[in-house]
Length: 116
Length: 114
Image: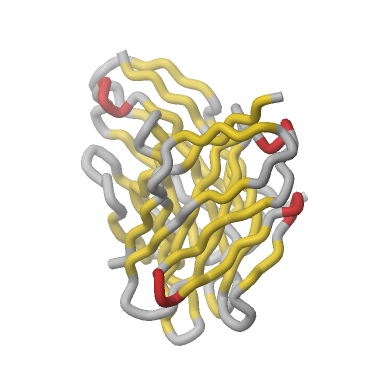
């Protein structure tokens, strides 16, 4: 079965600084990979996803993520953080059944705080 | 409007009193799933369903039941709730099949068991 690890529980960055949130997965083949964001009191919203092809994927709100097969990682990045990016971020992995998506599993999340 | 609807949004109940949290989606999605969210533990999957009459356990199924008799509905049943089931619950749905992926979430149901 697949699993997801987000090593950082809580990260604080200054507004305007760059951001990288780490995500490592365990899966026998190339999985489907996702990043979701949850603002306080809200449900989860998809930021970006990777299925195949270009390993650098662009998402909404200026976020990007890079799939590195050799490191089993899918880290989320943003060059300049805005105060409105303060939220909890979840990495997720889904099984890849020959192109069809299976069950989705989430990491424990990384809470991002932004200093003015 | 495409949406996943959960009810109730908030509920306070007592130990042992059976309750059902409903989940309905209007997007004709095959895949549906229930998660609970607790501080420091992230989202843990309770049960999921790949299609009608097909359900499977997630990571934390104990104390919960589900059914998938119709494509649009996926109720979560707590036969005898206990205080350790106090949590925020999310229902989600997605298209199955190739390269789909995006989960659509309900707004959450906050359950307190006294």
